[in-house]
Image 1 (spheres, rainbow over the protein chains, first blue to last red):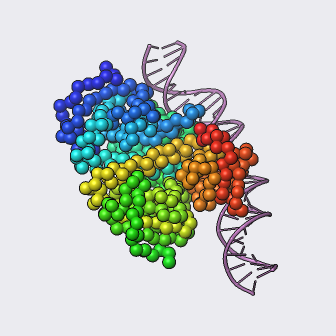
Image 2: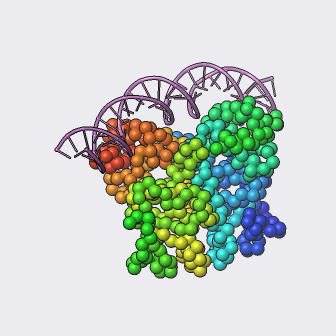
Image 3: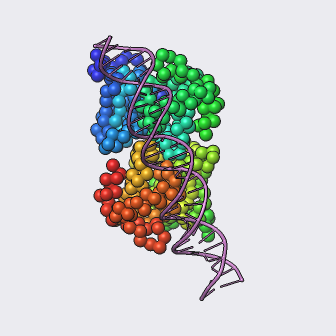
Length: 222
Length: 222
DNA sequence: CGACGGGTTGATTGTCCTCAAAGCCTGTGG
DNA sequence: CCACAGGCTTTGAGGACAATCAACCCGTCG
């Protein structure tokens, strides 16, 4: 069932920003990945562009000794794997069981060639990625552990629901590798924020977090 | 003499990648900035795109308490200040006395609208910025001080001359704010690399550095 | 039940930061 | 021509924050 191509759906597949895949004339298909499986590897040819239909994905780079930096998490609706050269610059893995829609990169480029709206849209997505990376450099280079974790929670809240109730799909180690910390430091920071009354833990696992005092978190985020 | 617009030059102004400003039909002018002066500020409207003719520029973000993260150094030939939305996301300052060529952003966009080659070229530049930011996230999140400094020297060598003789335009504090370190840690790392025999200092100031053992530096860079 | 993955917490270590002092070079002004 | 101030860099001493090492808890699943 998993990691198998499904038939192209009849309904239009929306790319955020108002374009539809069917309108633009692509074929698209869906694919399922089990938790922990690789979607593509760093330096592999970039044949497809992906959109998360359900689940969540991490994009990361590795150093030769195994140190890992996660550059981004991709949540429902997000496009990822868009490269302007032919090679993926990250490894992408499903964090949980995940369904993605695939677009053939060459088709996208072909259509974008004659469709300025799509071309502009692709540029906008690249620009958004750039902006995220720029902000993340500031976090990684200059923020304390507590500030990083607070910023992370606010980012996830904004991107998941925005209502102050965050159901994290990723484990502490993933968060740590995203924030340039260790999992213990992330855990300690969360405990400290809990002690401060900035958040509460809800579920039986510790991944459902209620942001009780977002102002306090925002103040920490500087 | 400084900070004054000069007449548009008669010779074609090359944008790296083979386009010429005159061919594309832009007006361009040159501007001089003294060492330490601001070229544009974060969140200012992005009216111009810039190319370094001589000198060097730092692009940075600040936290409210003054912590600074330099996202990139712009060296001779580099284009900077290219934004796809209307707002600059960094502050740009001349590191030394610097001459830049200005292109009106709106003209670029207008021309790009009917010139696919230019449009593709602008996208390539944005992609290069993205790639640099992605690599820098790995450095900031996961590399040690020594590895960061080694990587920095190799980057500067590659971008300045590639011959192993690096004349740094920036001070230790700038390097530190680029690498997410303090200036003392940068200085200590350079001393250590010197003791290891990986580099030599040449000039009377400590900014001319000979990369004696690039393999050793590359090994540190992981 | 028992193994395992995930999470928290404690003790200790280590890397890098902070604070401080001193050296060097440049430029300036007497 | 020399004295001196200021910017930049190096180096040292001590401290702090996050990493490491380790123990333990909890829930899930075979």
